[in-house]
Image (cartoon, rainbow, N blue to C red; front, top):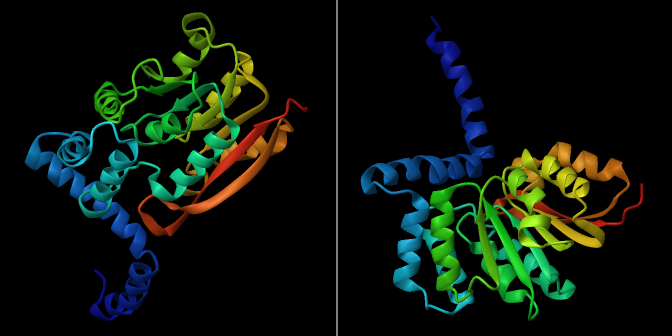
Length: 259
């Protein structure tokens, strides 16, 4: 049994840990504890709760107002792992500057980043967004349509990413991709990037933007990118969505074919 004197000696250490990592404790509280309490009380997932809030407060057909309403919900109600407004500006700028015609998003979630991409696309462009979770995809579908984007601009594919990628050419008529946004399972980043290479969907100049490469991190993906010689890499340092004191970043890759 630990004596009171030894237990008291650990108190300053514990207090130091709490102070140092308070933002991570707050993230855990908001993203896990609050979610589970609300799941129990409402009997519905937080993504559906967020959509109900957006439905009540957002202006239909106004993409930016839909995004702003999501931000208000995430800041004042519950945490959602959207990319948020800070990183959203980087995504919006890259899509607008590169004017891609064929875009792939891996990880639709609630459709937040989907809206950012869709509103920055040039006329005639098409966005394929992929999520394996049918319940989240159902929410995302409603959010995307609420923002004013139809199936001609945004097509939502409900299946695992490693199933969809090999089907893009034959089933969906996509020969090459101009822009790819990765924001799904971080352990899938490397697998899916290599799969995109294998099936020949990348062309010289294809942009791949990968979120959360610093937190929670995608070390094997980044190691491969830097060692392969196939990509030019630029890091956009930022903070975790809705938590400005937790450092994060997005990796912008440009496919060069050089090996």
